[in-house]
Length: 201
Image (cartoon, one colour):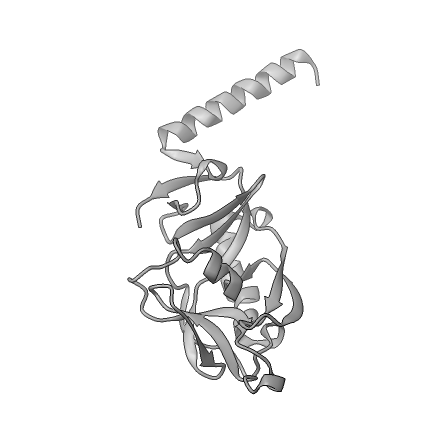
């Protein structure tokens, strides 16, 4: 690429940044923990954490309501995972574009600290440990229901094979049987160089 082409590209980038500034958009990387944003206006999201060139987010509201976890406490074979991997993922890909959603690994650890493995995913529920870590910023009393985590409450050996950790709108963590219905409030990790609009809760 010669100097003329470099200059042309630089001018195009300046023009793009100018247009984005005029429309009120900011780069996702500039938002802080707890900030709220949106892209299309369809749904709002909250920043959980910045990781260099990626950003962990959670939907502000429930994406689905009254969803059964499944007939198992194993997230890998649950109805919630199937929903996250299909319908919810497609919805997020329309909003953020597929290439901007990062595949990542989440630990599957029970509420009482038993390590059951990991799961690779793009969209997933929050974990028990994350619900504790972000307890100051995730409450949303406008939610209509509690929502699932991907963390079992405990294990069959300890007499709790049918219970999953859940989170209330106010941030309280409890447990619920996997055959009952709760909300799905997804977490994902995005490339942080996308442009979004800051929003109010």
